[in-house]
Amino acid sequence: MLTETDILLTDFTDLLSSQPQQTLLSPEDLQRVETISCFYQNRIELAARNGLPWDPSMHAQTFLDVLNSHSVSVMRLLSFFKQIPEFNQLNVDDKVTLIKYNLLTVLGINSALSYNIETQQLIESDSDLPSNVQYFRVLHGYNISMQTTKIFGAFLNIAKRDRKIIELTVIILILTKGFSVISDHDEPLLNDIMSAHRVQNDYTELLWKYMETTHGYKQAVDLFSELIRHVISWQVVYEQMRNNILRTLSPEDIGELVPIMKSTLRIS
Image (cartoon, rainbow, N blue to C red; front, side, top):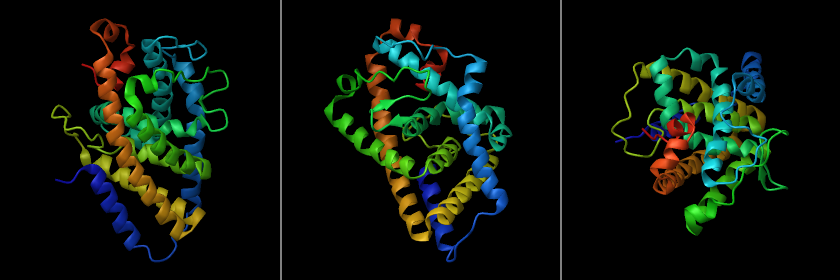
């Protein structure tokens, strides 16, 4: 049975085979790409204006603090998606489903846009304290830590080369029904799956045209192949990380999680 990630890869393969000549961005396409980058930059201010469940200038000392501090990145990423007109036009319940089951994995990929390679710190805004990663290897162990470092490094390389590729990718992935690798029988069907699929296809085509125009056909193929390969690997390792977190949390800890993190971790 094909997953939506398989379908995404198949759709893109079909797109490549049907594009023997360069498909240049139209002025309207270019404006969309630039607007999306503006939306991404605006997410910090918009999330702050709407209120954050955690003060990003406060040091996260305990493991529970670290989890709750991630709610800031979650709210900022949601503020980004809420600015996307096509996303806003989707069925309300469908948006809830897509966010609930896709956001955690997409959040990790999104982090590549805020990671400072020189200081090795994850920081989204100058007023933020860097994310506390002291519990990471203790919680997840050596093997997962090494896998995560390798895959995340690939996203960092893509983001360093061209941030807009990651900005467009997170939109595509949040729209992907069945993106989560888990076999979760509680995940509901979308009420209007065709609308979500059309928007996803539209942004996939926009990403391809942008990469081909900016980097050339051959490099665009290589970049997208690398992107898909690491997205699939990231899904698997991130689900293992989620399970490690859930095993660590006590009922008392869960009670102290901020609501948006309970939803992101899919804790009922």
